[in-house]
Image (tube, rainbow over all chains, first blue to last red; front, side, top):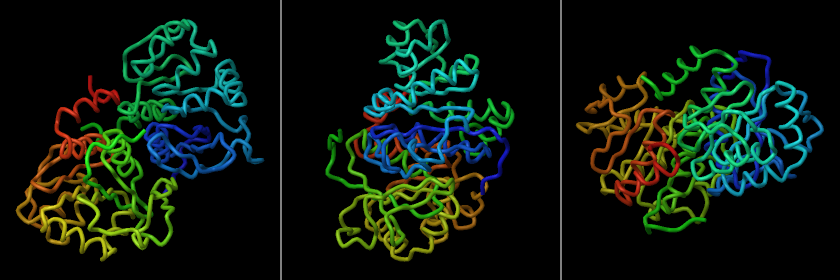
Length: 193
Length: 193
């Protein structure tokens, strides 16, 4: 049962070749916390297939007439390859990522996905992290690289990879509902004692 | 790209109301490790919807003519509610779980799912764990309750919940390919340094 705890809405963008655990851990934790979260396919079908051959049915597609970027407060970008490249090539999405950051709305990205922000020039002078092998891309594009599992810098949340997907999701929960709620959720899922 | 590292095959059983991260983390890690793993729907459609409203397309259904329990070496049971109850009510599955354990094949269960084994009388005198709130069910049914994140007792692997899904998946990898391979995978997904 979904018990809504906030009117803010999160959109997570799914592309073929995504890392499904990075994507769905966010969906799972936000559902548990009562934060409305919709999975949005960037392809022309609602079924997206991950880099590990897992097919997921998204809540809607970007071409859905009901879909409007103005309805959301946060854009979440999961990693995975070639999912990250597919997200990067979606101009309608990356234009909105830039707009969200400049509007003071929220953007969260994990694993390879922070490189999308870096290549758009959106990480200049901002604290961020990403998958270790790709960290040079952040540095080359002016980010202040950090080595925490999750890095929060104003309206930007970044994280390292599949193994940090739960801390990444919990950071989004903490953003909307506070650290105490996130810590309580961590205990409920047996992530923390 | 899937690079097969063993001829042993794993079947993970998905029911409506499953905990999708407990299920798909296993699929993800086994894919990365090159261990053949198929998701099998226990319903009469291949699309299964999780307790958090995430719909996943399974590789096959139990009623698929190509599906044969003899083709696999391990049965994996994810938790979630009411997914666990749906698995429990599937006699064709639970009969095979008992058969697998007595044959010396492998069974792995996480979160609420070890209670299925307990209620079948299969945990008598065996070391096991499960979701904290449900641990009395294990004790009442003769299990030797442990508090580790993952408990391996012969051909039985049990674990606690969504927050321990990665250690659970890594234990399955270690079973087939050794601890060193599992440790290496943990580093690759940025779960361990």
